[in-house]
Image (cartoon, rainbow, N blue to C red; front, top):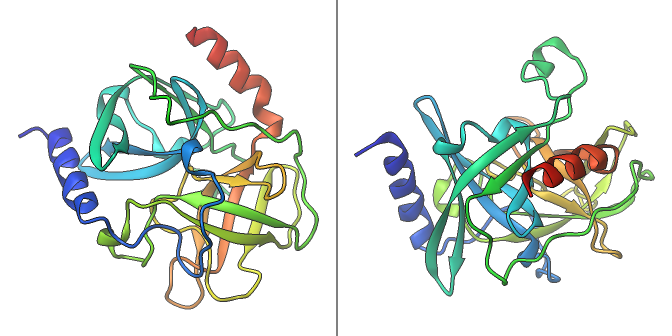
Length: 245
């Protein structure tokens, strides 16, 4: 069995049990964001995993750049009335501002990438609308929606969309959004939520793409969620999508 087929098989085993879900900590009922969010499977070297992504066209998904690799090592995953479906990936475009070593070098990075599916997504998916904002007020509420781990380090807790309320914290930036659980009960992104969209709760527009999460003490999730603002990159997104038509 090829390494990618092993990835697919492992993903199906994890998702077949219909686990509790993604996004750690207290969650809320999905207010209708599900049709905009999909899973992105990938293999990088000997490692395999998945991220979340937001649908931006009938055949395109926006996710985090660190979630992508060569198209033949990726799949888009969703369920059709419980039946697992995987779509081949035709092309990938990484934002030219992405720097894989940004954390080590403490430099600016734009952690965004576009993924083109080889066949159109079904009508059950709808492209999300983008916010034109590239800023946020302190303690402003947002919604994160992702398929990552509902319990950190527990792969069996992945595969079901969960939505949580987060709010902005310092530092305020025009590149990144920093957020935390307003109730300080541990809500936020976790493993597998990279690429998950962050929405304005009133307009339901996608304002950012999740890039990173951290936790308190020995936890890796539940304290901070970081995302990349979409608005400054709308020109790049439009250019890539037009070139794919």
